Image (spheres, rainbow, N blue to C red):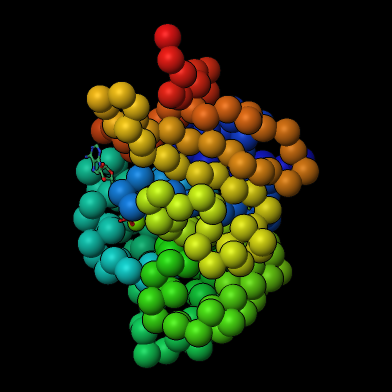
Length: 229
Ligand SMILES: Nc1ncnc2c1ncn2[C@@H]1O[C@H](COP(=O)(O)OP(=O)(O)OP(=O)(O)O)[C@@H](O)[C@H]1O
Ligand SMILES: [Mg+2]
């Protein structure tokens, strides 16, 4: 199976080599778990290490804001934007029904191999009708496969809830699911990551600790999180 290296240290080990090419991965977690950093790292690694063009569709934060924030981890998108191999798309809430069209034309323009949709939860703020939202997310996944992209779909889970997605459609349209946790364990908060499913492949079933450090996200593939000594 052909794999796409995520650029996230330790994660590819857990995924048995990376995200299977042309698949859609759901990245879910509560607020502030590092989903946007994770996605920026994935796109940046594609551009820098693999010469794979990328597209980042953002619904909540302005592109400029994300760009500035992730620069401190060493993810500078400007040269790739200038070279035409990378594009941010900032969603315009008044053009909800055009989002698929805008995404498809940008993917074709830059020849994107890696795509991020950040996030379904923010898209839902603009598209209040859940049926319509499901239709858009479903059609988005169909289009990403048709265009042979490897994609990350971000969804936020509400703290304390049990599901891994908010609208029920996200995991249904995704081939794999990665969940990020930020939980209190005794007196400290810890971050942990788990692969819930990975279509057509084996993967670690464990809950692994991860960190947000100077160079972005690092996962420890050898240790288990929240295990008492
Ligand atoms: N320079 C840094 N060093 C270490 N950790 C950082 C740094 N900058 C941000 N963080 C951590 O990353 C988190 C934010 O990451 P990010 O924006 O990717 O989260 P998110 O899951 O996308 O959040 P949201 O749900 O709000 O979209 C912060 O809560 C903070 O804990
Ligand atoms: Mg975010």
